[in-house]
Image (cartoon, helix red, strand yellow):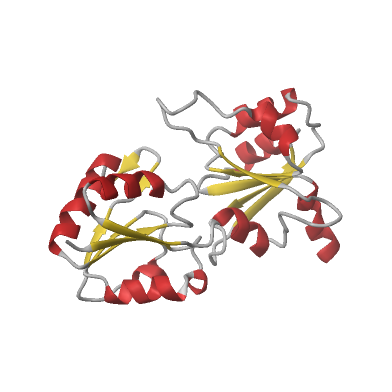
Length: 243
């Protein structure tokens, strides 16, 4: 029985991949990777390794989650080193916990290799600190895209709005209008600053700025699309001081 490594590839910049992650890609017998892993990181995989695309993008799934887990189980029975390569960090909206549970139930050893998550890295590349002594002493990471049949029906956006000074939303572009309306209903003002960052840390990184009162209109007019994260709060204005 082999061992499965849940490896975080980081947000895209190959320089942000951990040394341990890179070493495992060079030693792997099999690498099962996600859609958002950059081509530069995929190029680090051993030329002798079997490479399998298990990517999931909205409306286009290469493999179902259950199929991916079953594939990991099958490969671990035949190979010593199996890498499950995930964008960002495996345990931050990456379903790594689900895959780890299923693998362990089958008696397969699993090791997690953390990766840098986009919620920290993308704002940093845009010169936005998610915490700052003068602006924010707390930050909330929340998903803007929820699966059906989960442990609770929806994010409590009212609690999120008042729970911290900085809000970082993953996968929220498709539901942005609803999310903004919920935050405004919870008491945030239309002047609350927001930044949208697309393809964070990559050469093609794109940013769109505004406030809760105008960001939906700006997204529609600019054609801004996923994959992107949103940062909400006073820290968004920090970049103006830098400039």
